Length: 185
Image (cartoon, rainbow, N blue to C red):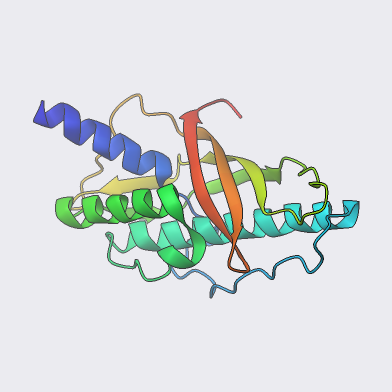
């Protein structure tokens, strides 16, 4: 049972380990919140702007998650800047797991593509939520234990389809929820 729990935890850790850094750098770019739309009624231009801001927020989220996992769960101060709600709690739990099991990542995840599902303006209100979908490749990423041993289980997928909800919270776009699954994307 303990081995199964560890296997599931490590598999879950690998599936949520993401990075937008393809240079191999473990230092993400500084976080800057995305500004909120200024009008109260969403126009087609605001829909495009909201989609662009949600994609940018997703990319920042990936950078912060990458920094957290490569630090072994220590670099957590930026998690509340890019996540909220369920996703914030899940990211904090992942950091706890990495610290407790002395796991860290080496290498980088390649984001193959990312796109927003075009938001539809609500009548009389600004857009405050956008669904984002991405494909990423973890074949060049290793999760290692304290001894530096690769802990990826045989058969673990290396391509993932990631679906995230991004919400406008207090003027900043943040990932609020999501899931991923192994896929040939």
